[in-house]
Image (cartoon, rainbow over all chains, first blue to last red; front, side, top):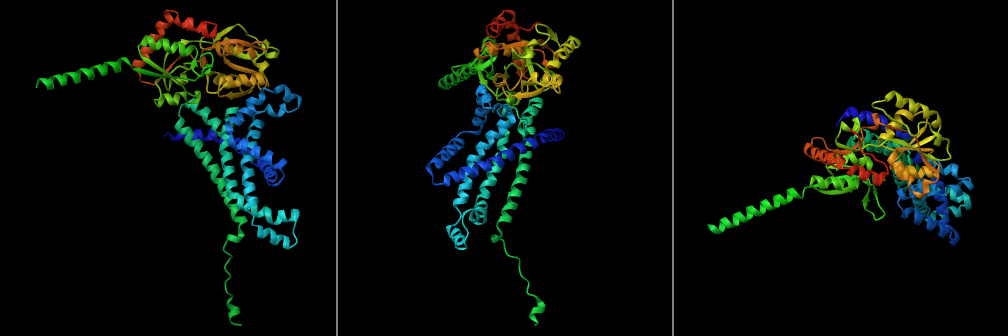
Length: 241
Length: 282
C-alpha cells in the first residue's frame, strides 16, 4: 500500500462527495413525498387507487436500478421529439435530473412499503384512546398515528437511506462524476484498482456512519417512553419535616 | 524385471506425450472490450466479432497457439491483465507513455487518427482542418495550431468522449474550459447521446466514427469533422497489451504482427472492417 498515493486519491475522490450526497438527498426527499402518497393509495381501500400503487411498487422493486437508469436516460433519449413537444426535454436532457428521477422513482417504491408497514403497525387501541379523547381526522393522524408510525418505520427507513447513498454510484454510467465515477477515472489513469477502491469504500463507510448516527439520534429522540426516567433523588430536608 | 521395465517405459512415454501435447496446446487468453465497433464488438449472434477478433485468430495461427478470446469491461482491462485473468489485451488500446509505465506492448498493429462526429446541420460540421492530418509528436506546433483553429467553435458546447481513453486525455488537455466534457463508459453510449441531442459532438477514433456512420440512423444526418490528429498523448498506434516481463510472449506477438503486416493481412482486415487502411507506417 502506497499511502502518499492513497492520500492523493482521497483528495480527488472527496470532490465527488457533494454530488453523491446531493443525488442521495434529493432522491430520498422527493422519494419520501411520493412514497407517502403511494402508501396512502395502498391503504385507501379503493381499488382504483390501490391497484396502480401496487403495480408501481411491483415494477420498481422488481427491476434492477441499473436497468431503470439506462431506460430513463438512454431509452427516453430516443423519444426526444415527443418529449420536446410536451416541454419535458429540458428536464430529461440533463443527466443530473435523469439520475435524480430514476433514484426517486426507485426509492419511492421501497419507502412506500416501509411507510405502509409503519402506519399499519400503530396499535388500534391507541387510535381508539385518541378517539375517546375526541381526536379525529387530521388531528388524530398528526398527534397519534404519524409519530408512532414514524418511530416504527425509522429503522427500515434508515436502511433505505443508506442503500440510496450507495445506489448513487450507478449514476456514473450516465456521465455523473460522483465518488465511484471519479474512482473509475483514477483507476484508468493509475491502474491501481485496489488502493482506489479501498479509499472509495472508506468514503462511503464514513458517509454512512454519519447517517446511521443521525438516524440513531432521531430514534432516541422519538422514543422517550423507552428511556429510563431520570432518577428522583429523595430530598434530604423533606425527610426531617 | 522385464515387466517393470515395460511399464516404466510406457509411463515415461505417456508422460512425454502429454508434455508434448501440452506444449502444442499452449493457450493464450486474449481480452477484448466487445463494445468498440468495428474493432471488437458483440455481433447479432452474441459472438465477439471485429477487426481485432479476426487479427487475433490470425496472429494465434502464426504463433501456433490456441487462443481464447474473452470480453472484459474497458475500465478494468489493465488491472485484470495484471491480476493474470488473461495474458494479452487486444482492445483498440493505444500505446501511450502512461500505459507503458504499467504494461508492455507488442506491435503496433494499427494506427488511426481521431476526429469529431457531429450533426450535418450543426455549425460544427464546418470545423476547419477537415482532411488535414497532423502528428503531435513530430509536428507539435502545427497540430496545436489546428486545435486552436477549431476551439472557438466548441465554446460552450458539450463534447462526449469514452472515459479512460486517449480521447478523454486529449479532451482534458486541449478542450477543458472551452467545452463541457462528458465521459461515457462505451462509444455506443456517446453515440446514443449525440443522436438524442444531449451532446453537440463526439470526439473519438476516426475508425469508430466511420463504424458509427455506417449505421442507418447516423449515415444521413451525421458526419466526420475536424483535422486528423495522431501522436503525442494520442499514443503511438494500437498494440497488444502484455504484462511486463513476458518477453517470450511479446517476442512471438511482435514477430506475428510483423509477418501479418508484411504479407498484407493487416491491410486486408483493416479495409474489411474500417474501409480505410490503418496499417502502421514504420
